Length: 195
Length: 219
Image (cartoon, rainbow over all chains, first blue to last red; front, side):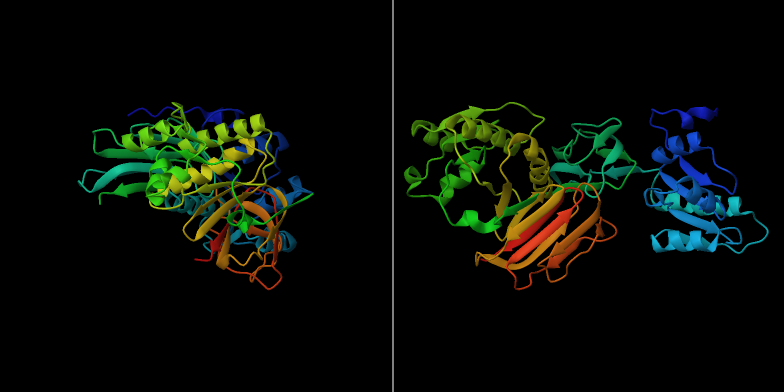
């Protein structure tokens, strides 16, 4: 099977590419950084990468907090580590000396991608006979930038779901008995139970 | 500038305008059984897929305005609010608050739809909009400072602050049992529920993002 890929797509300002950002322990290019940071689904630093993040975001570090910093912490500056720790960033110490900080960071990233369901694809079987007439998708805690569904009366395609913009309520099913939902952020599914 | 408001004050005086959104007319008809004539709404709006035919007929005959709204992208509640604002402007009424009865019970998706209407309400009307059902009230706080008077005597024992729609990066309160200071409110981090009041009779809330206030009404 052929896998198609556009290497520089991540640097394009528009588009729906879903990617994660790992910052490694090398000087950062400011232009690339801002373009990538804004649209990344997950952001991490490998050890001393946190020093570069801290420097390049001087004056507004608070707006650029990584989801986690991992490594053996022999490169990260103590005050940088303390800053991100106080701000609530997850610090994951990885002692394995056979693997680089980059490799270990990648392993952790994959676990988080799976755990968060950032691959975000769901298949709901709605053919038990107990389903009532309504269902809905509620972006309850955060806006969802891209939701795609099948199996609903009113399906969505790369749709923004957001309070104040669009919330899917009073929806219902087509005849397929299956609903698929792909979402980039946590999304609350609600459905009627036949009384 | 701080916006001051007494959420439960509306349970005291009379209404300037009264409306039903579609099937809301069924509930009005039932609850006023025996004296429906004394409780005629100024208008009933909606796509009329919920109102019972005999109820619709009754109010039509009694001279209530029936306004059919076919837009399927907006809920009956939202459309009713749009019509209400037009009537308020047309009649030149001074309105302190718009009270929606119902909308918080039964179907979870419709409770969420009521919240969604509160988000749209800021673009529809300058008046505060509150939704009341049974023992609950909800009111959407826009970013900024708010002062809520909670000393009508009708306040029940619980209240909460719900960051519905987006996280709030910084919320500060006074007057609550558990106050917040520059606190993040976010689903998955912290949501303020089962909160209650101190003895001051006033709650102040400062928020950087829309935040849903909810409170108990004494039964």
